[in-house]
Image (cartoon, rainbow, N blue to C red; front, top):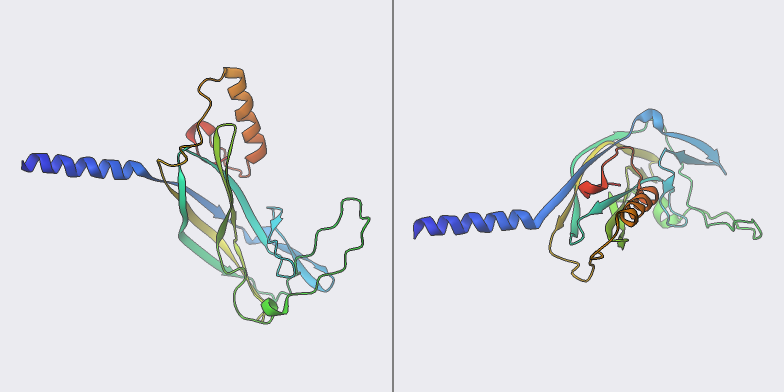
Length: 218
């Protein structure tokens, strides 16, 4: 009876471990990668990602956007930042505010959006978060999750700019969900390779190359 109880406990432990999983990743920023230009009297930050915060009138800070392929039945439970190394820039910064989008043909004149006083007059760090989940979707049988990570932090009233030179994080998820999302039962090899190529081309946003067959980052 005692032996049976031990086996049951071990089996339950194995099931629990199989139901929870994670993807580990890391983001590093070299100080030399950060620069700024004066625009309308404000400091407009430049970093290699090409993405920024999007709240109109609030500080425009670089954002790290990255996509991952997860198992089809994965339910994301959160992102855990295991290690955070924060650095402070020496200079004072008047960070450029996010502007309204302009038309592609410049047919409409868009007025300059002044800084949001509620945000720029406080010492509350902006954006005061490390990540958001931009999307959690399915494409051609692949489960794709896109994160927006915020490695820059601005304290408006003190004009202080911080950045994380090193972020180690894990995307945590459970298995057994998304029962309505089922891969096609049959698919020829050519079609499968075309789908894989499309997913790689559309969603690969990181310099580290990981195979889609490993169901991780694109």
